[in-house]
Amino acid sequence: MVVEQLNVAGLLRNRRLARAICDTGMAELRRLLGYKSTWYGCRLVVADPFFPSSKTCSACGWAKAKLTLAERTFCCETCGLVMDRDLNAARNLAKLVELIVAAGSGPEALNARGADRKTQSAGQVATKREPRKARSR
Ligand SMILES: [Zn+2]
Image (cartoon, rainbow, N blue to C red):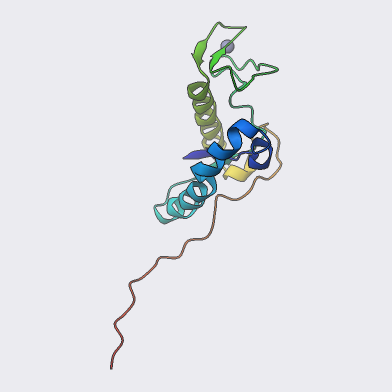
C-alpha cells in the first residue's frame, strides 16, 4: 500500500482548497492506514511530499516542469501519453513501491528522488486490543 505525504500546510494557503482539504480528514485516514497495515502485516510506503507523482510520465519517465491544479489531464511531451492526472500519479506511486520491493529493503531505504535520505516510518506501533475482562465481584 502506498500513500503520498502531502504538504497540507502549503495546500491550505490556497483559499479555494482549504475547506475541502480540511473536510477530508486526511490525517485520520493516514493514521488508520498506519496502524491497520501493521495489524494485517501489510507494508505501508509513504512517498516523500516532493515525489513528483503528478508531474512525471508513468510511461516514459519524462517530468513536466510545471503542472497547474487546473490541468486535470497529464499530457506527455515526449511519448504522447494522455491520461487523467490522478491515474498517472497513482501509477507513478505504484512504480515507487515496485522499486522499493525490488531493492528488497524498507521504505526508508529509497525515497522518491532515489536518494538515500530517510523518510518517516510508516506509522504507529500497533498493539492488539483485547476485550476487557468482566470485573469479578
Ligand atoms: Zn511519456
